[in-house]
Amino acid sequence: MGKYDHLITYDPRPDKPGRVADPSIMRKILYMDGATVAGAPYFEIMWFISPREPAPPTHTHDFDEFLGFIGTDPDNPSDLGATVRFLLEDEWIVLTKSALIYVPAGMKHSPFVIEDLRRPIIHFSGGPNVEYNSTSV
Image 1 (cartoon, one colour):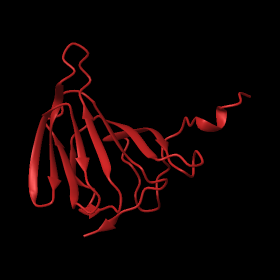
Image 2: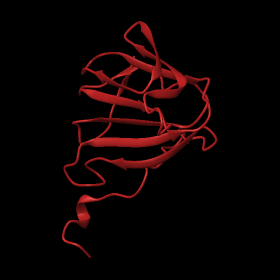
Image 3: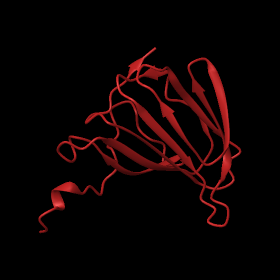
């Protein structure tokens, strides 16, 4: 056992009751927060492998959040390989390139929709909180 093993996680976030991830649409990869690694900020990574209907519901956080949508073509990493529509406040943004989104604390955001998926995309989210929490609006 290494001296820094307590700083490493190898597991995805477990499903919550009533919110089970559909493995035909998304595959959870890794999740870290203060409960999995003491004091760590929240960070989650997943693959989207099929189009996705609008989800999750519109919400806010009391912390800043960042979201990433990354294409998986090693010869053209800026090509997202899909169309992602994402709601920020009252405006839908459309992504067709790999992108990072900064969502300031208190800003309404989501749902997001994944359309025209030609190859899997990597999605991640994170923020400085040691626990993920949100308030539906």
